[in-house]
Length: 57
Ligand SMILES: [Zn+2]
Image (cartoon, rainbow, N blue to C red; front, side, top):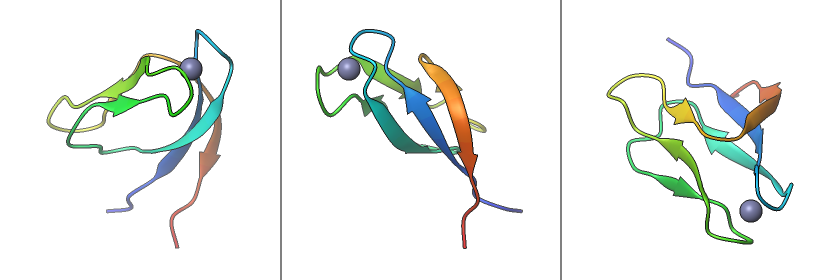
C-alpha cells in the first residue's frame, strides 16, 4: 500500500497545498481556511481540484 500525497488547489484562493491521500482529519487551506479534504475512512475526499500526484518516498 502506498500512501500517496496530492497537490490540491483551493477552490477559493487558488493556493496549492500538499494533502495526504488518506488524511484522517479534515485538511484546511493554510491561506483562507477552506476545507480541502475530508476523511472518509479510506481515500480522503478532496474539495479542491487535484493538480498533481506526489509520490511518497
Ligand atoms: Zn484557500
